[in-house]
Length: 300
Ligand SMILES: Nc1ncnc2c1ncn2[C@@H]1O[C@H](COP(=O)(O)OP(=O)(O)OP(=O)(O)O)[C@@H](O)[C@H]1O
Image (cartoon, rainbow, N blue to C red):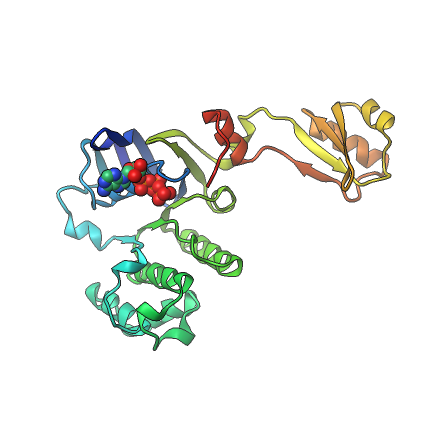
């Protein structure tokens, strides 16, 4: 089944078209990222799909149902990460998630398990206003997931997290997706999109420029690979003579860089001559994809 089917979505604020004729189709069980710089329209797009914001044009169906006018039955099947400021005031962490759980008819024990899964067990008695930014963000994610929704929307879920908490959340989101839940997230971070998402929608100035797997997006760049060989392994002339090498660059720290459009031939040659130790291969990144689509450097 299709989890999300959006056609021709438009949202304008005065002269600004925040979302400009966006189509988006997400299959059940997919993990899709909406990636783009500040102001690209990611949040506005998600809010229209979630049924929180009325589109000026276009239509959306989520889990086979219309999202607008507000559809109460659908709300129980989706999970939307709240901004930290939307917590019930003066409640402790535990009271907060128990309140959410009770709204969905979920018991206290499974709610407590979510606090464990997001690493907030030692904060259960802390009031929500006394949490750090990262802790509040983890609580908001636990609240979004507490009723085990079929489809989860997360708006920049890792923005306030330190690197370790970010990795932990990646693991958690992957495990939810592995269990069959559909996940849609927005992110500024290319590495996050590459690490987590089956497909990535690259958004800029209200438009979805491309939607594809990270690997296909990078392959479509047709950019050469860069193979770095440790210092002292190859001299310039020998490097240039290797089959498949188009250019040779010198990097004082790392050694010699072989630029090639045929990395498998070059790697095979290096293997045959026992020069593979310490070799590093770099292909294009989603940053390069953004640059090639927009002509601008990606700035998160
Ligand atoms: N309620 C509003 N009234 C007027 N303009 C708005 C409103 N909400 C968003 N915008 C504008 O619409 C554009 C898209 O905003 P949106 O928040 O959807 O982008 P975003 O990609 O989520 O950005 P960020 O990564 O910074 O969160 C921005 O230029 C923003 O200033």
